[in-house]
Image (cartoon, rainbow over all chains, first blue to last red; front, side, top):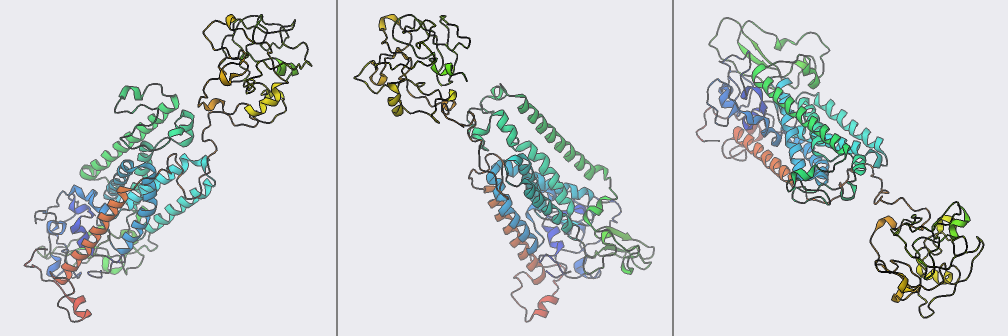
Length: 358
Length: 251
């Protein structure tokens, strides 16, 4: 919990988390500007001393999962999926499970397990894809927050779909907005990856339009309200031809509004697929960076200068990952960026990574 | 509505014998001797062509001589006083019969003496097959009034539930007055269906198990293979312990 540095989430060190599968870009593809002879803290590292033998692992050793112990970054694509099940600490898992067992449970009971499963996983994965593309390179990210933001997006859609059926829809909307604002503000803290939240929310919105039933008012007009339940895949809705049994009949006799809504659904699905593919392309091939994007996950520094320890010196070659605590707020938005200071002199001297963000 | 409308008998009430009356509502007072389907003054029963509808009619085609005429027609079959006098007798609520709701069969009894429209008994010979010719008292199928489909079994048709009911809701709105969704509840149609949220439970279990695994792994890394419970004499030793670089045991 406290080695090599204090984890405010009351959890394992982030190198353990990286070793167990967190989203860490260096374990997924090569990053420009990282020297090959860089050494990293091992998962068992307990200090930030560069000379500690425990801080002289290669990237392959740090990443684990059978990666060759060379200096090449492995291609561990599953680091988009595994972190959904990893959490950085008690505080992290506590909040997430609280949300999951209340909101998530209700939502799954409302829409059914299959739909919930699809949205949960997609939102989580997309959140990490977003983070992989636009978060700082040294950030190691875990948590089910992306998935849970997808569920929050479903809740928002539910509110919008049943607006006229509610006693106080504006109150509900305010509550959801407050929820999102608080989460976004918390995500600006160092150590929390807002891109996971943002990506999960966007994916939840688009996928929600795809997989949820039409809005209540639309369903009533089309005439589906009498048996308006999310029937399981196996049971047919009353009076409506089941798609699997009668694919052509499924489309017969449908009203225009039904077609319109299906068109919207198809558009949303297409958008989601295209954006997902583009982001993956960007992640693995193009590496286009977004200079301002990091400000979505950090607070802008008020000071113009960086504190002394982060400035390059002419003495050593060392890799610096800015620490999270107890550094001042200055340079907050530079936290998590991998920075390298190289000087001529002792090229054979290896360096050790300082702490990183999680 | 014109008072005359109340007294115009419904088309679904065939009379017993005689020439076909003009049972159809004719706003212009013209007798209508054509045999054509009646306009559905009540949507309850499908109008059907009334052919050869004999009845005692006045000169203008109706059974009443004037709008103020309210003869007491004798009951056709005193043995069957259960005659409900049809669904429409006294049921012309829309035109101000004075009753506020659907008039049940029981209450028809009091009207039976007063508001019978077709007094003459039907002659079965005049009515070829193809439709039921009801008698006045359909309870045993022997009524003299030729009221078709009088004894039909009640159909569970919500379209007609609200006939003769004042202030009834429009038909076809089965659950139109749902309870409003309260604050914090999910409101999609079907949200109240009870299911077991398998995915949430399974994922929660997986995440909790993985987290415990993280803690154990973290402990192993820092405090040796056998965990941090072993081999330390005090907290300081535990906290300052540094694992050797190349442990002989796998993690």
